[in-house]
Image (cartoon, rainbow, N blue to C red):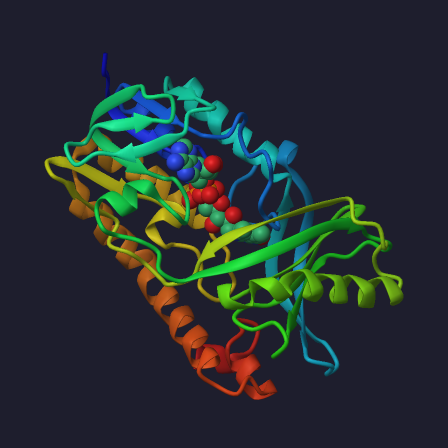
Length: 339
Ligand SMILES: Cc1cc2nc3c(=O)[nH]c(=O)nc-3n(C[C@H](O)[C@H](O)[C@H](O)COP(=O)(O)OP(=O)(O)OC[C@H]3O[C@@H](n4cnc5c(N)ncnc54)[C@H](O)[C@@H]3O)c2cc1C
């Protein structure tokens, strides 16, 4: 028997949980499906969000005030005015799912969506089927909902991250730009007594990631900034090809895309949590109201210029010789980026 919902949300990351909450608040019968067994686990994130994004103190770990950028071996550039906060991402995602449940959404874990059929039927890994008036695809960078309507992230960055002990308190995000980290950058983000240390590269360089991260870890451990022992390892893909049209019809079923599925992560920084929460809320509202074009217009207004600029800078860098001046022009901490 095919189960029915008014709004079916695929994925319960920040975008999906936010969409489910908003649609349920507007009185829709919402079912949200997530392949993981619990919210946000395993964490695949460096856990930095802008300070202006509301997050309960229960799910935050420390504040960030500044950014320090290392271009090759040059002396670091300290830039104040990058206010952020470090999350406990698993707790953050869980808190958004709790909000959705409180709003009345039926959230279900261990539910892999295998296929979105042409007639709008959604098939799960165990063969069960569901149907809805509207589908919200919040299923990340390799979205099946996006694939169903032909809107796919074609450019990705692959990442690897380790969590290590942090030897001294630090309230800045450290960014490592180098021709040796092609298509991405390295990072050290402090989280109280620990830090997330990672790097992202274009997919063709994925095999080099382990060595890049080990190299950064060795250097920072020798400087006495972090411990040598790796406490945990993670990674994942980030969409860096820019914004996709965030809705379409799969035959007659409207499908809205939100968060990474809509290509809203920044192609230069890889940051996508704030955009996922915001677009998820808007997608939930649009799913309830049927105002799909308004959804697209709002995302265009808020994100288009910034994401297009980032995409252009990324592409310029990839087609350049990756000299220091090009690395600077491709990074948000330098005025050249904004010119
Ligand atoms: C290593 C790494 C570090 C990052 N660091 C940062 C950072 O510091 N700050 C920042 O802002 N952004 C960061 N990002 C990006 C950020 O994590 C994403 O932009 C954000 O998670 C997007 O939220 P989302 O809800 O759109 O997608 P996701 O968080 O990816 O959620 C999608 C959900 O859909 C589920 N799903 C996928 N396919 C299916 C299926 N077929 N069936 C059922 N469920 C499915 C997934 O399991 C997942 O839970 C990082 C990404 C990576 C990989």
